Image (cartoon, rainbow, N blue to C red; front, side):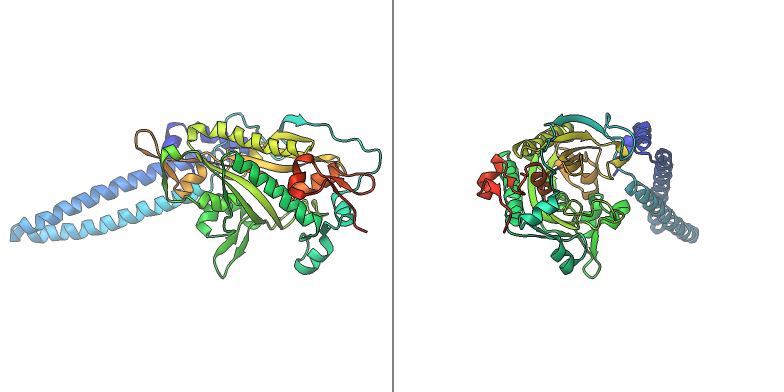
Length: 420
């Protein structure tokens, strides 16, 4: 949600953001026009209403000769006030509709362009050279008795799966490791609801252009979340947080659901792109002036997890046109997938500045006692997809998989062995 006062002071900032995203910059001028018209209509309404009240008071003091004319004037003013109020409301509604459709203002320094215009910031580790033909994660998962896509499809349809045996244990170990790291860093652990009201989904920016990605339960008017970012963002909706409580850091563990609309034919083999998965997500409410530095901290915690799992990865700065509605800046960490000979996203961290907090009305009291909108940030710490990178990068010729040392205490074994 755009700050209209800031827009009036510096409309070029929104125009530049829209250009960076590949969107129409003239929306800034449309907003300014609507805002001016709304404020003018509101002034007219308030002026007429004040005159109406003044005339109303005069009627009781007027002489019989004056009263009839004053009553006629009061009647006319009542109609004018009603019309002026309706016009102000109409313009306010139109303005709100336009504002709701505008994505967050891009942070200065983010790359311009679309999905392929990201900037690689760092590359960690060297992709392994195999002296045998590596198996992909699904073949490995089947040999280990860890992944069953066939029965997942039988029970639920395409892009569903069972994690079985060591597959289930591996996911639990991974997610527990992520939760423990976050708690050690001061995060409050949360198991949030995964069904949310429309206003929560809308407030986080996951409806509108993203509505086709979301599962909806029409009979209950509830949505299944694609990330625990959504319920965690709604956790403090409508509240004013004490300034000395910031930053409020939460880490949520939840199942996530995505329709993956428009992605048919992409990454359909195995568990890279599926409709249901588990995820550990960091979420932070903080002072807007601290958001940029907090974003760096979230990225560092993500990289710490990847380093522990001994995975080759790269860090990318996502281009403005691929940021999504809420993010002003986003960094992804992509792990090397040997059989695809490419990097695939494992983590994503976004600085949403005050965008979500404005929509959800989350404020804090500053040092002067004034209420201000908080900034919100999110970052992935582990998901089901990480299993892909773990299996493929740590596989051995016989189909076994060496468990990264940091994960062994959580899994209780050093090597995953193929089943007979």
